[in-house]
Image (cartoon, rainbow, N blue to C red):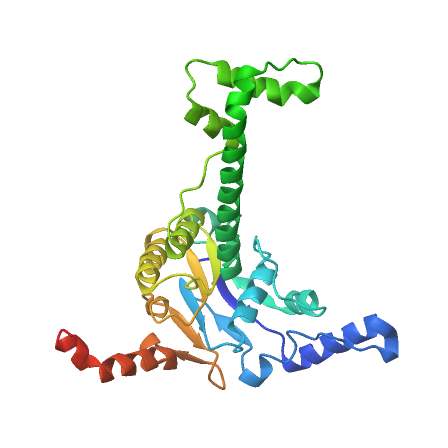
Length: 306
């Protein structure tokens, strides 16, 4: 485990930060147009989080779970793809947060605080969507290239190209490929137009995204990773995260309301829907109990085999 605790600014500190930003903007006449994330957490009585191998920030839309996760990531300076949804107070606010790392667990570093592994990072649902869009866009481009190169195949075989300047290099290279007896038209198209990514469903692609990026020995912040994942794939992601937390020396901080991911073994769960924020077991959470009530009320459909 790497991160032990995280302290948010007190209400008084938040007021000082806001006044500082106002003064920086325009002296005594200053104002802050976007004070986010000012004022979100003091009303919830949330000033400190203590972490386990798996820590979950639970809550409905607007509860602040993604904001809190992104603040932790910013304070830790984690690598990321998508930028946080921040305002002019964000960097000042994140700098005022306090971090306490765990003590080094190996004998050589005894008594010292451990360092965060360099490949630690935050992954968001936007990253997954962007990945899927990029793969599909690339495949579309490859298909266009294939059609263009297919039309040029016979043309380049019949009309020789002479190298008169560097601008002719690519055409000469392609004609040389065409003339190679060992190279079929299919192989030629693959070399010149590119190769399509093999994509499955959105759920399969999203699961592949996480499986390829989560490595052993790191801290990961995951923002609603269940998006795009059907229940079957959420359960598969559950197994991946559970294995990495137990055997792979990983620490996870998740913002989620997925009943499946909430059941991660040994998870410390903060309920951001409660006032004040309270630690709960996954089966005590409203989202999970709503699902349970629905299936319990319709139990006869399953028991009768209908």
